[in-house]
Image (tube, rainbow, N blue to C red; front, top):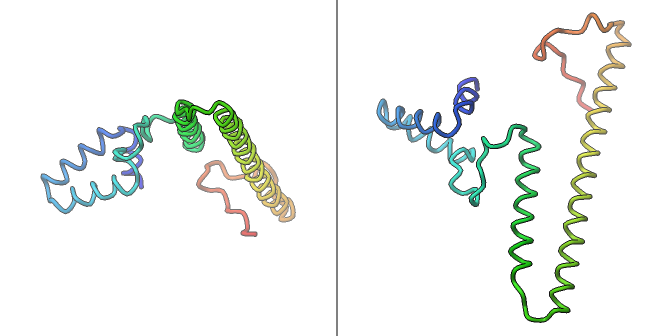
Amino acid sequence: MEFVQKLDSYGRAGWLTAMIVGFVVFWPVGLAILGYMIWSGRMGCWSYGGPGRWYYDNAEGGRAEKRRRRRERRSRRHAAESTGNRAFDEYREETLRRLEDEQREFEEFLENLRHAKDKAEFDQFMAGRRNRGGTAKDAPEGPGEAEAPPAG
């Protein structure tokens, strides 16, 4: 996966270059890279005109930001479509606003659940270390050296 991370650091240009070189060297390699780019969403052709996956620094924050922009674009599109009936248009706008608020609250709720689960797993891991007699200075230095918390 180091190869994928390296190409991701170059963005779409890196992937396109690798694909072209793959086609020149041995066409099935280029075809495999093209298939992977389409499957993983790195091609960006079908992202509804969004800025693409490399625009966002933080993966989770990026997805949330992308969802928010898509929601705003959708609500602007619906707001622009007037039916000619002001009462219905006002009702629709209020309903859409309420649904967007509920969706935002639900996403916050899910984020809080994820945070609580992560905290519980971390607390369980730390309790297990304390029970074994480990101290803070016994903790591994690198992120790859840490033990995985028990599945629960």
